[in-house]
Image 1 (spheres, rainbow, N blue to C red):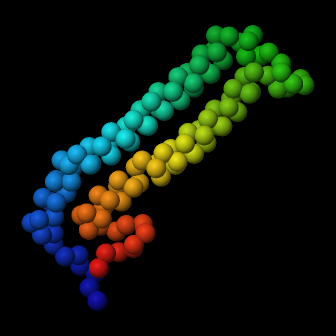
Image 2 (cartoon, helix red, strand yellow; image 1 turned 90 degrees about the vertical axis):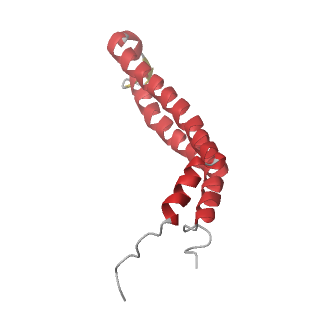
Length: 121
């Protein structure tokens, strides 16, 4: 049993370049960017709002909501964690519907391992 990997054949790089140039791969990249970029901007703006309000609207952020220790700043801070988990959950659902099927199809076309079938061969 050898641990040496076989040398790539001349057709393997061509195969990957062909996939990279394909409309299907371009659509996959567009679908990924269509989720990631807007969600990143939305989260950044949400975080920036929290930081700016904490720095410049101290009276507002210090407004008590419940009891003596729960104020708007604490709620906003906790909502940062909630929004992170919501974004991760939304991405997981989006990837399952829009990204993974296309990526699996492309992977199968070039002979790579797929999630359902295991190693090809």
